[in-house]
Image (cartoon, rainbow, N blue to C red; front, side, top):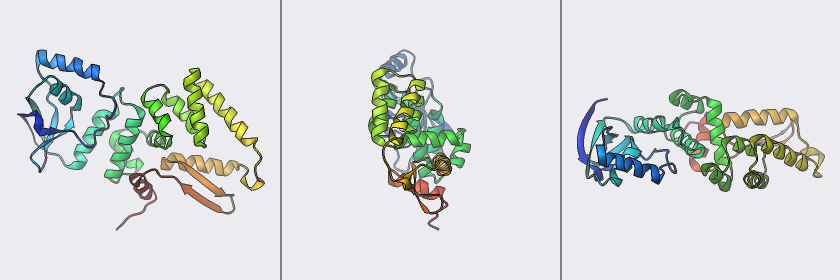
Length: 266
């Protein structure tokens, strides 16, 4: 791949569609960077590629690009790189995936987007971005949480540790209730775990037909499948006969699961 630095019109640059950073471009920090650019210029050119439409798509440097626009620059230096769609999307993810200020939901959505767009299994994605597969599966499971809980995670009113505890509950209403208690009472992760266990005990005490009693073997298999598939898994039946339900939350999520199961259109 070739690279060259050029000065181009800033209006000819567009954001990378695979950019995982959705909510983390804080206005105050961008304004601070814009003031620095006004004083010393843009000394670290963003990385772009030229598209067939004659515009330039960002591969890396979204924050610098936005700050330069805030600073009122009409032209900026850029490093132009010849890259395919897949190379561009991976570069955007890899640049951002290990940033400390990228929230877990952004990371999860980025992982899912790249895996779906490039038809990567979780194992393959793991080797590409240098993140262990269980971590990828755990992040993707966050997307099964109710929107209210995802928002709490984005806003940092709950932590990733809290979210993992909430995921230990299967009922969406119970998940929401636990999240509300965590926020209202400012619970630690350990305290949240105790509340989650109390909710589980309360659920188990409810009258239920004998056929629906918990099976330790199936519970272990269920946990293993949820970690591997990165989504909620349900069993209907017992160890002798039944069905397995895999939950999906969008068409891309369904395609990802089909890929994980070895389905191919070819």
